[in-house]
Length: 462
Figure 1 (cartoon, rainbow, N blue to C red):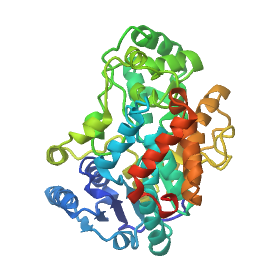
Figure 2: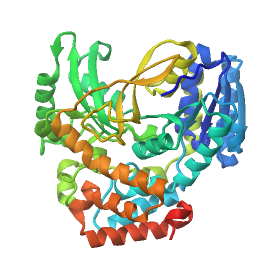
Figure 3: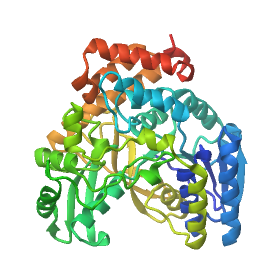
């Protein structure tokens, strides 16, 4: 991905730093690594009212621990990028107001998205309304920090990361669904997490736990027994929560929403042989089997969880105050990979992360060349180096391809300005196809075009 070698005083830029919860958690992660405590930390957001409290809390945290970190805050994107060694993207365009269109318009057509930010009509249009911002970042970065390692946390992960790479950046997309799911599975089996070995690959929010073992013991037979006992359809949930895998402002509060119900992922494992890395609520959006009717949705997911409603009701300032005190008391890294990547490149200390990167036909050989895939990656002073997985089990690749179709069509629309490709992307979405006719899919797409018109790239407005 990148051959950049950073200086001993790297410049680390966060674009979208005013998001409160998640950017500040990343700042805590960065400061947890001694080698990064002499960095220049540049916090950029277009909204100074949101940026200010984050920058103030960061300075307070730095002063509390006595670190020589330089903290900069700016609303000037180009200045924030100038000379950056690592750039972390954490923003969404349009805020909750635009997000409302993503979920409410499809619901009038019978398409109920529990999240609606990474896949389906909601995910397609969240991506498209972000393209103009991505283009501005790319144009500046190719001039003022062409060798920077970009780290994308913005959803829709696969579309955004694929686009940033297609436009010439060196970008890895990061999620925490692999970390969260493998921890949940270890708890389910009462196995210490540090004794578990696993191998995961696929696409973001639809990667697969290909191997799960403890020493020489294959844990899958016991996993199938435990999950069938606790999460077979109609039996309700247990007391073991999964992980959302989302990274926007309410992600931390949302990460325990599952209530332990994993009927969707258990059904997938029973049918296709492997456990999936995204929570049952969110995973149910990626496939046509679980949300056909309100009654069926309630049967698979008895406890309704609505991410839009959580975001709309969120209290940002309370979260940052809580996090600041926690990080003053104990400065330790979270399970996120972002700061770990920067530390590995700065120090040369190897680490392994699960990252979203261009497939190029060589990483997962039975997924398309232009897919964005999630695979284990070695990180050291040479940058992010993805692992070649080879072939996925045929049925898993087939499931992935149904969502890759949507992602690559949406990216193609952004690259070419072809509005028909947007309709194709929405129509190919498995949940959409299970719910509406092609005529209604087009009508819904046109409504979403109209609702988001002012934020779309010029080429897609008319």
